[in-house]
Length: 244
Ligand code: KIV
Ligand code: NA
Image 1: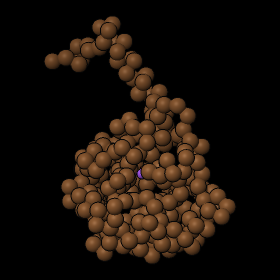
Image 2 (image 1 turned 90 degrees about the vertical axis):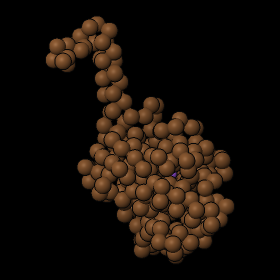
Image 3 (image 1 turned 180 degrees about the vertical axis):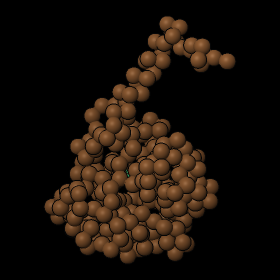
Image 4 (image 1 turned 120 degrees about the horizontal axis):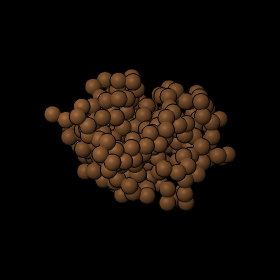
């Protein structure tokens, strides 16, 4: 699984046979430039979902429910998820939390909406965590496993495990029948997910420890932009072969 937020990259990832694309609320950070995922709205995400669905005819497209669009309860969750399916064209939705959203997961799955859960370092709870740090250490590991079992029992078909000890993720993966999708959760999850700008080296600054950079797109794109600027300034572009 990779994230995607627009038509062009969704098409590239679809051609690369990435089976599941997540329109994450990480769009808050990488598309809209917010500091956290908390401000991004359903209205800001739906057009991105539509673009990804248009660009990726093969992949399953999962839409993230943003903060404030499902916490009020199952009825609000159903209303929001319905918008992502009807207006966005998504095939599934993802929401953060364990027991506290189990009833919402039950309502969505009963309505025929496939649901992905999300546990561990759930960024919408950053203020409750007091920062972005590893979750599920020591005794908190048993709690996380219980939360994962609750999400499974409620009908979710997969659960993202974010920034938890590898050993805990392995244990959850063994105990659950549904798929675990790891991000900073070690090698033993059933699947993996990364924010695509992280995996492609597009972001500025240092990436978290769990990120592997499979390309250096920030350098490549920056070099392309500088070269274009220089050539236009110096009259080396366009030339006759670019002219009619
Ligand atoms: O919003 C997002 O991109 C996510 C993934 C990193 C799991 O939730
Ligand atoms: Na997210």
